[in-house]
Image 1 (tube, rainbow, N blue to C red):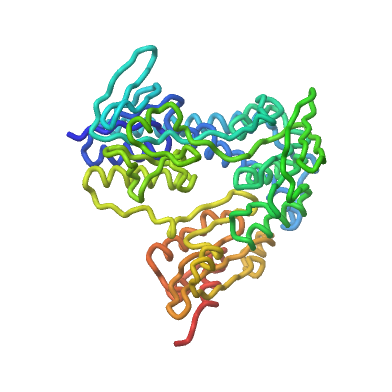
Image 2: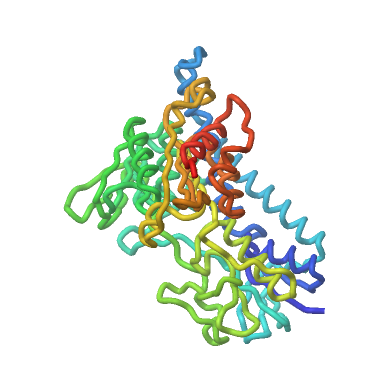
Amino acid sequence: MTHVAIIGGGPGGYEAALVARRLGADVTLVEKTGIGGSTVLTDCVPSKTLIATSDFLTEVAGAAELGVQVPREIKADMAAVNARVTSLAEAQSGDIAQKVREAGTRVVDGTAVVAGPSQVEVESGGTRETIDADAILVATGAHPRVSPDAMPDGERILTWEQLYGLTTLPEHLVVVGSGVTGAEFASAYNGLGVRVTLVSSRDRVLPGEDEDAANLIEDVFRRRGMEVLGRSRMQSVVRDGDTVTVTLTDGRTVEGSHCLLALGSIPNTAGLGLEEAGVRLDDGGFVKVDKVSRTHARGIYAAGDCTGVLMLASVAAEQGRIAMSHLLGDAVHPLDLRKMSSNIFTSPEIATVGLSEKAIQEQGMLVDVASYPLASNARAKMQGIHDGFVKLFARRGVGTVVGGVIVGPRASELVHVLSLAVSSSLTADQVAGAFTVYPSLSGSVAEAARHLHTTL
């Protein structure tokens, strides 16, 4: 029987364990903080739980348009919100742990290092153990990047993992960083009724995303009272009592009650013995892998944020599944980022799939583009939705859908049909020809596809 040792119990690790057990392998999974890893305990699950509360308050704020009168003073109880966040995260971790153990995986609570291509040394509860393995999967994740000029104190200057200790709403939250994490938390706290200032070093928020979508989100942010400081780079953050001061490189200062640092992530690869085992790391410390999750060291695979391929829980899980399928001789479909879908949980959400407009332009691909505003959708009008759109990209002359963007409430739920279209190489006519419910937001996907119809 093949023995697999997995270091890290996040999505890359636990999904790999489940696949390996189904394929008949003996599996040992080592995790030091809790099954589910940071994704479940301190990152994705907690943040989206917080965002669910924010989204509800945003909907309540628009109730008058739907003919519903609500009391003026409706606000979040931060202690109760964060207690729920923590409780749900722990419950989710427990559910996953039970599933993994019931599948027959041996779970070890401890830390591990790679002692060689076929050995893992584990420290657990003061005891040491050497595990001989036919293959090793490294799925150790990443942690928030900090700056020596802006060190978190866990009270007023915070990383996104430390926000859930707050028991009262910040009076003024200064968010440094306008990437996905910064934008999501800025949006969430704005929805909770907090005064928010977003410090962005670029000329717009979400600089790596679809330009139309990012511009719409920034416009929504400003209309909802958020202050967005574009082309503003942080120099330092200091705390004086209950006040934090963010100093910008141009000399300006921003004072707030709290500061959230959203400066990116650092892979958890230091001190694991990876390079000694022949695993190659890039300049940022991320593990180099191929499309089936292999490292340069024979018998060692890697999955998830520690690879830096695309820092999403769904990608981590897929990398872990692919690794075990490749190792154990099952059918393998190498990771294809051209068909991946992702979502940004701002309000409204931004869902994307396949090739972006920028990637299409860089490749010189000829496409037809159709964009359809949600404001024209009957269901959107009924629900008081004003912001959002569906945008599709189809190969010119062929009609194959190669990418798409959906901006709107619950865009993450709408994007699956486009994910199917891209992964299955469907044409815009085929997407348009599939029946949709009337009225429904999904009807806008079909409508955008109809705009791409070409008479041959």
